[in-house]
Every structure is written in C-alpha cells, then in structure tokens.
Amino acid sequence: MKNDRFLTVILVVIALLVVVSLSLFFIRQDSATYLAEDTPSSIVHNYILAIEKGEYERAYGYLAEKELKPSYAEFEQNFLFYDNNTGYQIGETAIAGNTASVEVTIMEGSGGFLFERHYDYVENAGLSKENGEWKIVQMPYNYWSWEWYTEE
Image (cartoon, rainbow, N blue to C red):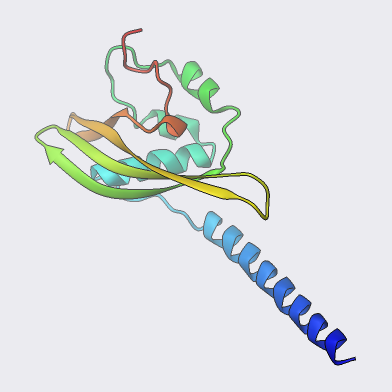
C-alpha cells in the first residue's frame, strides 16, 4: 500500500512539472516583443522575430538594398515551410564604421521527446548602414538563403 501511494505522488509531481513547463514555454513564446531599431543587435532580433511570427513584409524591410537582393516573393517562398524548431541568442556586436557583425547562437533540437539532442552553433549576422539605418546583408542559415547577395 505504501508503495502505491509513493508511486502516485511521484506521478502527480511529474505531471505537474510537465504542465508547468509547457505553460511557461507557451507564455514565453508569446511574450517576445520587437525592440527599438537603433542598434545592429536589435535589428537582428526584430528580423528573426518577424520571421517566427510570419510577418515576412516586416522581415523583408530589414534587408539591405544591394545587388542580388531577393525579390519579396523569393524571400517569402524561402520561409513558407519554416519550421520554428530553433532558438537563438544574440551575442556580441562589433561595429566598424558603417558595417557591423552580430554574433548569433542558433540552438536546434533533434530527435524524440525523451532522447532529444540539442545542437548549438555560433554564426555572425552582417549588417551595413544605409541612410542612417542598419540593414542586414548576411544571417545564419536558418534565417537566410545562400544565394542572397552572393554571386552564383
């Protein structure tokens, strides 16, 4: 009898932890907000957030007006089947004149529920200043297509 109660208590505690974890996950996901667009890191944050929210016109507005910029249709097509299975963390920013580099850590998960693996890798976002505003010229793979702004 004691073992049954002990097992029941453990199962109830586990169930409560799962419910709390899922609740926090969904609450945090909806609470992401746009930042003031005055620094390279805030532009990178806003660009990624716009993609995650499906606000592709806003995300497209953060791209630099340079040769080989994708059309809006090409840009949107790249994200139509976007899988929001990644997280990101904005790191250090280095500014040199009218160019900036922002460190972005991408956190990806793979595998099943119990045996999920996390892969973190660091890449840099590249920005340039156009008419006093920071614009993106390069982003990590999940948020970018290799042929944008590059010669094939």
